[in-house]
Length: 298
Ligand SMILES: [Zn+2]
View 1 (cartoon, protein in one colour):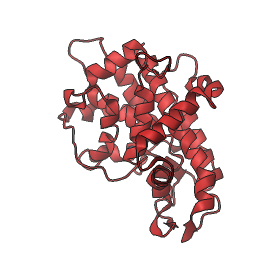
View 2 (cartoon, rainbow, N blue to C red):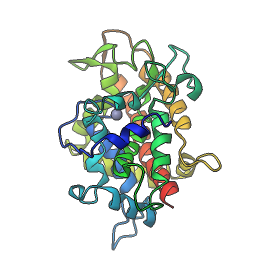
View 3 (cartoon, helix red, strand yellow):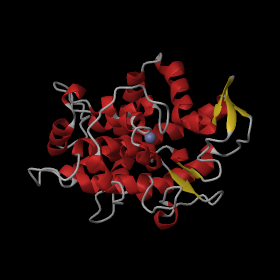
View 4 (tube, rainbow, N blue to C red):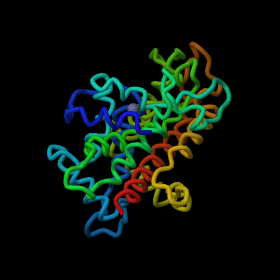
C-alpha cells in the first residue's frame, strides 16, 4: 500500500500530546500492547521479559522523539491523536468486511470508503513495515521513520481489536447502541475500552500496570507454548496483517457481535465470557508487534 507514502513526505513531524478520542483500543489497550512488546529483561532477575532483539530495541530508541524517554508505549496512541489533523490516516485504523460473512480478504476488503485499494489497517501495516525496512540504509531517509514506527505500533494493536475488522453496515459496531452495565455506549467502544476499564477497576485497582503484569505472566506461563505460533509469519514475509485480520473478524462474529442487539444491556455474563478474548488479543498484539519489529530491524 503506497498510497499514503508521498503524502507523508509533505507532512511536518507534529507529535501531539493531546488526549486521544477513543478509536481502536483505547489509550490503555494501546499502552498495554506496546509495553508488552517493549518489555525489557529485568536486571538481577531471571525473568526473561525482553521481547525485542538488541537491534530492534536500539532502532526503536533511536527513532523515538527524545521526549518519549525511550518509552514506545507513551506514544502508542499518537496515531489516534493525529487522526483529524492527518485526515487521510483515519481510514487506516480498521477494515470493513461484508455484513455477516465473518471472513476477510485483502483484495476484497482492504480499501477505503472511496474504494481506494490498500487503504485499511492491513495495508497500512504493510506500508509502514516496508518504510521501516529502509532504516539505516540511507543518510537522507525517504520517509519519516519516526511516524512510520508510531503508526505501525498503533496499527498492530488496532488490527487485534476484533471490531476493527467488523461489518460494513454497522461500522464495526459503532452504530450498535448498547448499555455497558448502566452506561449508554456503542458496541465498538465496549471492545475498545469498556471491557479493559472494567477489568482494570475490578481486578487491578485501576492500575493498568497490574493488568500488564498479568498478561506478561500468562505469555511466559499459560500461553507459552502458543507464543511461537503467534510470532510466525509466512516465509520471507516481514509483516502478517492478513492472519491477524482473519482472526479478528472470526472473534468479532463468535464473541463481539454474538447475542448483541440494538439496545442490549451487556453486563457480568458478557464481561466475564469476553474478557479472556480481550486478554488474548492484547497479548498477541504485543508479542506480534515485537516479532514484527525484530524481523524489520534484525
Ligand atoms: Zn486506531
